[in-house]
Length: 149
Image 1: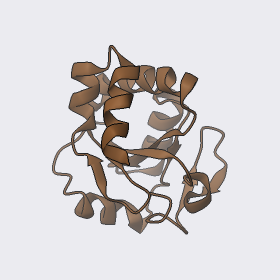
Image 2 (image 1 turned 180 degrees about the vertical axis):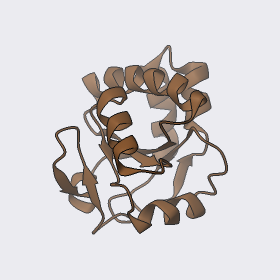
Image 3 (image 1 turned 90 degrees about the vertical axis):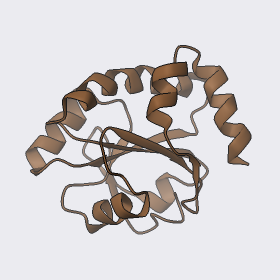
């Protein structure tokens, strides 16, 4: 993702702007497509946060990028700041959001893809994998990495 998103701005939980190309360099990236108004998203987000926190204990190279389907900046920021893990988000209104939705053929939310630096998909349905196998985060991480290299 670092290559694909180079030049794109991200925000972190402290509302600092980061350059995606630099921030994501050397990281295994999960694109999380979600929105505050989506009940299934609100059910999955805490599971993703717990999974993320567990993985990051041993693997600081894991990063999630929130790609919001919210209709207003305030909704995106509230959902991101109050309900999500210590990851990053693409700011509201960034054209890259629509481009990613189209590129990864996201038809429903929540949805999550694990992607390589060039944008190639490693795991098409990471959301289901986290829901089904996330109780053993390390084993799932190792499974993903087997496809990553």
